[in-house]
Image 1 (tube, rainbow, N blue to C red):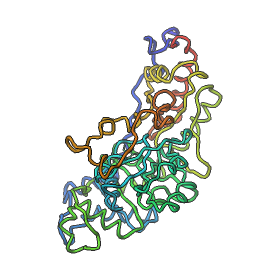
Image 2 (image 1 turned 90 degrees about the vertical axis):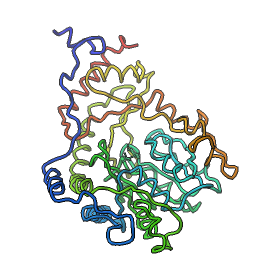
Image 3 (image 1 turned 180 degrees about the vertical axis):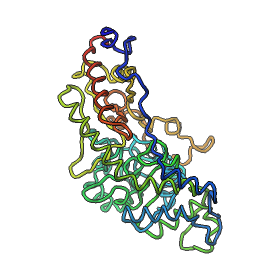
Image 4 (image 1 turned 60 degrees about the vertical axis):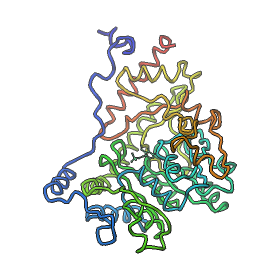
Amino acid sequence: MKDKKSKLAIFGGMPVLRRALKTPYLIGRKEVAVATKILKEGPLSDFIGAPGKYFLGGKHVRSLEAAFVKKFGVKYAVSFNSATTALHAAIVALGIGPGDEVIVPPYTMSATPMAVLMNGAVPIFVDLDPNTFCLDVVAAEKAITKRTKAILAVNLFGQAVDFDKLLPLAKKYNLKIIEDNAQAPGALWGNRLTGTIGDIGVFSFNVHKTIQAGEGGVLVTNSEHYALRAQMCRNHGENLAAQYPEAGPLIGSNYRMTELAAALCEVQLSRLDFLTKKRRSLVAYLTESLKGIEGISTPSVFQGNYHVYYVYPLLIDEKKLGISRDRLVDAMTAEGYPMSKGYVEPLYLLPVFQKRQVFNETHFPFDYQGMKQNYEKGICPVAERLYEKEFTHTMICQHPRTKKDIALFVKALKKVLAHKGKLQ
Ligand SMILES: Cc1ncc(COP(=O)(O)O)c(C=O)c1O
């Protein structure tokens, strides 16, 4: 028995975790009550894509937007059926289109650069800060051309991008800032909430996020003009062109959030501070427990940032650790604690960029007006290194997990490292 316990699970030993980890599922009594009421009474959605009082949706959608305005101290909040559609609306709101470039990081969810492409503009990838994993703002300056209209910065894994540098840079070159804040609701840069620092910020409520409603997103801004264009993009805005000529050219879509999702989101929003505090306390415990393990670096927090740890990121130094990142991840997964091999493959390596093909056989928008861009392997060495061998993360700090779960995670890690000779 002792033998079986000490043998690594990857070689047939007993895993440290012999039950399934509780999946982060956050729906409580309040959500069930509000959802039941809406299901019984309807309507499930209260939008009409035409001028009139239903253009802005029903009471739960409006109530969620009002709650966002209050919580985040912004003038306008516009709900969407996902952060992906909200990101597209942000590009539309800013009037970014064919002939324009937008600077984006390559280490993010694909929705970030796709929002740019969807409106016929071109993403330009810039490498990461190796410690925070957010955009390297110094490198971003070198990528600015006369076509650059905006920087789409991602507050990755729950931490603000380097706004100390980003804000002056945007001012110097008259660029807009969109914050992809899908992973960082409640994070702070100094005393400012992320998502509210740029011209537009976007939040996500998909099923993996800190607060969730299955699917959903919200766009926040202090600009009436951007809010109007976002609302028109969300709900067939072409039908309101005569009513709002000041909005300028655009076509809309159906990016509308249902009443059910909005009501769920609003309850979830009231849980955000609790969830953030709990995660941060588990993170502090995990970081303390990992101290002194050679070859594994715990998360770096930029000075002045309040990190909300959507995931718990770890950097691996394979030489110091004595085994590869991938062997470590395989062994930990076998012990019951799945970890990631990198995050995403740097996005410029996707076929859409390698082939420069979005619309059938054409190369639009990549070749529009003689545009040129470099998507070759090697352009963002930090992102490539992280993906290939240095980065891993765990979701072990998410609610409803507890200190006991963290202690077992650390036990599994120590077990794996005690047997690393067998893993080489
Ligand atoms: C950084 C980032 N941006 C955008 C998205 C897209 O969010 P959604 O699934 O709500 O469309 C995600 C979701 O994983 C994300 O992590």
